[in-house]
Image (cartoon, rainbow, N blue to C red):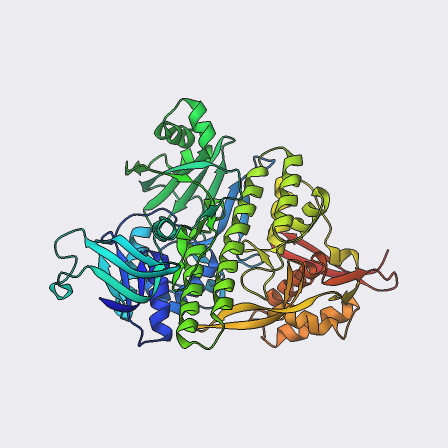
Length: 578
């Protein structure tokens, strides 16, 4: 009954947390308490590529790949100001090479994701945690929780079926541990510890979903590759996600207010949506519903605190963002990874515990909060365009910038979030800057120039900045990374940001900067694909300009780098001044 770490919830967050704890410290004793018996169905099947990196780190990539889930190449949308379909591809500028399956985690497969049947996927992960040495208790609930101030002192467990606890457990039903983690989808720890939640959005949606057998796929790409479908209805939207060769998840998201005033039941709206959406109606023409409609409220939030003296929240207990961005599993498993690494550091006692907790809390709020704001932006793109611009201003303010609506729209158009929870990468809610700009043009029919295309001389600007440290989670450790801080804006000296900071200390002409950066990328420092690394470096330079870390200017005698992002990826060329 005594463990080093006790985890409530055996879904992807709990299993990821347990696996990574044991991987990096095989001596650690971990118990995972799960109230259901796997397999069981669960919504949230569409992933982002970041999950696959975590699966590989857990040592479970081969098992998940062998399950033959559809490979997610991207998504097809009907959204914004036009009824036209448009594609978002993870492999921008490249054709999917169609490797035979099962495939290794290498090459293009590092940039794709899965569309998973959660009943299969979650069991694979939980079984792997058990195989690695975690004690897994299924059909056992947490019936009570003992606390002492900000500390958790024990979990009272209750078996829900005969045989869910072996006789070895005796009559004692209290688990004690050094650290406790809530990886459930509910408020277990929040309720007992008095933790408030923040919901920085006016979105109040409801969702209904069911599974269909033998629906046609909208698109077949290579061996098992496809794109999810996200179709706007005006009064809501539908997701269409193949999760296996014959099984497809189809869900409806609509505003709670619309449901209330429609006079219809959610089941009726679900049937209406599928019948009226032409693409989905065609794809389901010869399909059969499983007739197990599930519903939920879609209230986006994040917890005011995600950790305390000896406890952590991870997964949906810490925060939830609207499913429009397919971020659920990414938020859950990446958050669990950070929790595992933080616990490992706390056990070693070599780093400041206050800093470790603060970085964990800030990372969760930043990541979930930005996904919520970005989801707001998506929804506002189906509304009046002036509202969309005002929403951009709110997003910019949330990231620490005081901009009017026009400036904020330009800022978001060029990528916006130069500081994500992975220092050294310029992206917004898992989208790179090119994708963000291209998406905004799709939504608004408004083009904004890249700052680096309008200028050709660039100087690093760290005037007035202070030094601080941000966290970098790697190989079971939390590394403090030096950064510049000015207001709420951070410039981490890691990855592409560090490289460009060094380059800009020596070179200022865009032609010289590009030549030096290209040579560095060719060395494989930022991955095997030099062209992709170079494109990411150009995005990062743009982010540094927008966030004020680089001051641009124009020299009429020098060449300009023209940058454009299209469906097929980046187009870049040097042009003479006009």
